[in-house]
Length: 210
Image (tube, rainbow, N blue to C red):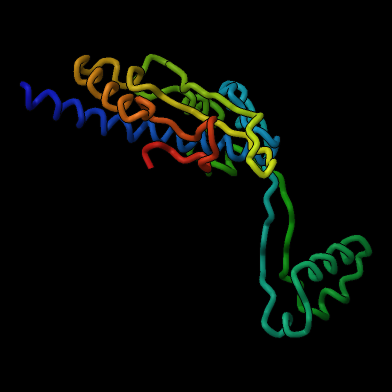
């Protein structure tokens, strides 16, 4: 048993952490887009879910590309877009046709943020699952933000950290193995669990499993 128990524990831990990491990666994706739109992260995961269910994301629809001949003639994407916008306003497409831009499209559309970020992986009914730690009885990930971090150059950077302690998703496994695991990580000054981001210093929202 002294050999089998640690092996079984590590096998189950590895299996469970695949799912926990998947949730953390999806939360990171949502938090990064939330920051792009709001200039900050959120430590309220329930609000994050509501935003995923109701928010939108602007995307550029691109069709067609400028040819070498068009580029050599001095045409750029910006000029092409301006030309097409002018034609739409005036109803005169002569210049568009003369420059061969009939199939050139650059439109900004607003898509549901849930579809834009996760491409059908979740629905409005299932997206709420990502804030709960797998293999627990609906225990939420811990989320923390730091909106006051400033670099030595005076640059303000919002920080976020989302984590799941070993005691949550490994809580029903062997007690001694779990205690030993936590002790090893704490002696190394590591967080005893899985987490993404860091509220003490910028790390590009990396996960401690990466």
